[in-house]
View 1: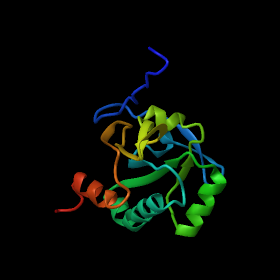
View 2: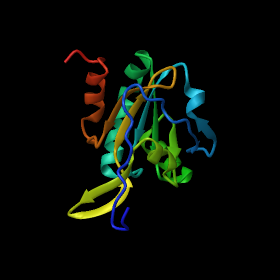
View 3: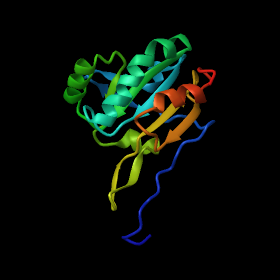
Length: 165
């Protein structure tokens, strides 16, 4: 591979085994995917806490949490932010689901949510807003990449068959 070549992120697809992980949450405590087994888990990757798009998306998940939970889903958000920043974000926006810190973006990379991005003509490596739904047994049920912050939770609910529209 030449030094100018970029590596394409390997993306997950339905039926793949979700890569296991253990990360620190907003309180500095470890939380692992394996501890969430037995319930379907919506793992969503977002670029940065307290930015407009990420706040909108997190609040949409917060506002849909009761109905997602009633349908058997739990929600976990992952970003490259440090736990202290996640704690401030969770407190300010009253987020009651876990926010996990992936500072070295190893988990995002394993999930295909870290890679080449383009913004205003500039190409760089960064977090790709993505949502992976993991079933009760640790298998990928649904994988969505390059999702929009606004309206994503409503689309996800439709894609999961939770809304009749």
